[in-house]
Image 1 (cartoon, helix red, strand yellow):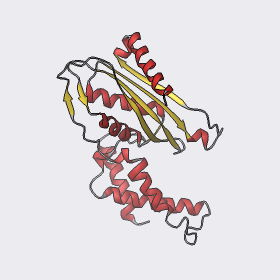
Image 2 (image 1 turned 90 degrees about the horizontal axis):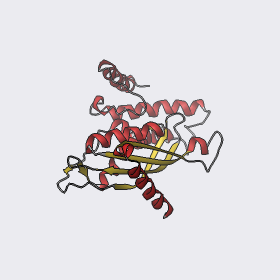
Image 3 (image 1 turned 135 degrees about the vertical axis):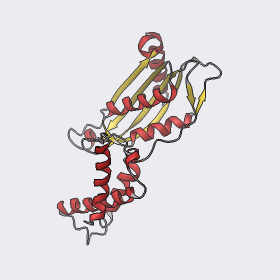
Image 4 (image 1 turned 180 degrees about the horizontal axis):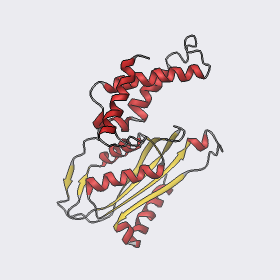
Length: 232
């Protein structure tokens, strides 16, 4: 392998360690990747994937179907399915709650495409977000929820940690009185391998603020969610 390619990932790791920053699979490391280095990292990933394919006894030199597979998969990992690790947070304009809105808002379902950090198999599902604003809350446009969800979800991770990260992000940006998130997803590490159960889904939730304190609000949110699901 070209030493320059290998050096790019080592430089990024060195910066992260020097700063005392974590670089787990579901962490965003964009602040430590300098311009041009992502291209080198993608090329390094492709080089390693070519060796993995050779180790699987696949003739990538003469098999026209797999000749460019390593390059395609490297691009998919770095630029698409794991892009939330390497891209800075999307710009989101926040608006003051000038009307003093204090009624429950529900956004969703937002489509989720992620990957299990255990097997790198797809996680495909939906997310609903419930927000109870107060007079000091910031409001964001509807499309921005989808952008923030995508940024968090395009990383290898487990579902429980993913929606906790999303909750932290929305809480920081909106400062609502209450926040509720529900995610329902198919996990291909169960459907494609292992038990190969095609019907199992995982559903989990995060409740913050008034959704924890007020049982009636929580019931209202979950009832409205159930009615949305029933209408699909």
